[in-house]
Amino acid sequence: MTTTLITGANKGLGFETARQLVTAGHTVHIGARNPERGRDAAARLGTRFVQLDVTDDASVTAAAKAIEADGGLDVLVNNAGIEPRTASGGFIPAAEVTADLARSVFETNVFGQIRMLHAFLPLLQRSSAPVVVNLSSGASLMRDLGNPDSPAYFYADIAYPSSKAAVNMVTVQYAKAFPNVRINCVDPGFTATDLNHHAGTQTIEEGAEIIVRMAQIGPDGPTGVFFDAKGPISW
Ligand code: NAP
Image (cartoon, rainbow, N blue to C red; front, top):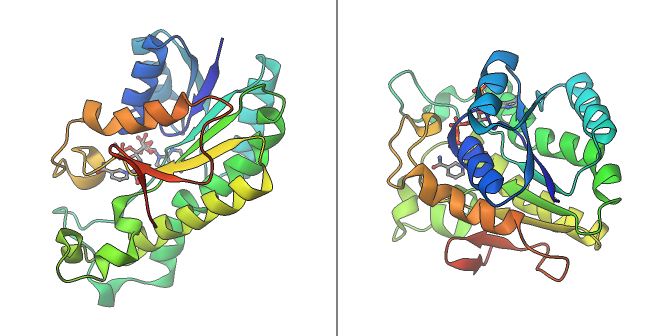
C-alpha cells in the first residue's frame, strides 16, 4: 500500500491528483491549511485530512509527526502554490512588485517546498520506494519567457516565474543529495483553476495527469528531471 501526502489538496490540481491517486489505490492524506476546506475535501474522496500550512514550521512539523504516527509516507506531492494577480485576474505590473510581495510568493512556492522536504525526507527515507513531485511551471523556463517568438513571452509577472525557476533548482539539488529518493518536478500545463481565475486552457483532469504519473514512478524511475505531459523537458 502506497501512502501519499499532497499539499494544497483541498481544491484545484491538488484535489484532482488526490482523487486520481485514491482511484489508483493510494492511501492519500489531503494537506490543507484550512481545516474546514480540508476535511470537506477528504470527506468527498473518502480519505484522510492533515492540517498543513506550508509557510508555518509548527504546522508542517505537527503534520510530519501525525503522518509518522499513522504509519509513514512513500510519496510527497509538493503542490501548494500561489500566483499574485490583480483583483480582475491580471498580472501585477512590474513597477508595483515589492520585496514583500515577492517574499510572500517565495514563502509558499519555494520555502514551502523546502520546509516540507526538511520535515518529511526523514520519513520518506524509511519507505522502500520514496517519491517526491514538486510543482513547477512552464513559466519557470527562461528560454521561453525571454524569447519573443515563444507564446510564453507574454507572461509578465515577476515573482511567480522566478519562484518556479527556483523550484527547478531546488529539485535538481535535492535529487543529487538524496539519490535513494525519486525527486522530480512537473509542469501541469495551463490549467483552468482558481490560481489563474480559470483562464487556463486545459481541464483539471488533463493538468493532473503528469502529477499523478510522476507520483507513481518506481525506484528505478528518473530523478532530478523536469516533466510535462509529453515527457522530460530541458530547463
Ligand atoms: P489553486 O486551485 O489555486 O490551488 C492552490 C492550492 O494551494 C489550494 O489548495 C490552496 O489552499 C493551497 N495553498 C496556497 N497556499 C498554501 C499554504 N501556505 N499552505 C498550504 N496550502 C496552500 O491552484 P492550482 O492551479 O491547482 O495550483 C496547484 C499547483 O500547480 C501550484 O503550485 C501552481 O503553481 C502549479 N501550477 C498550476 C498551473 C495552472 O495553470 N493552474 C500551471 C503550472 C503550475 P487554499 O484553498 O487554502 O487557498
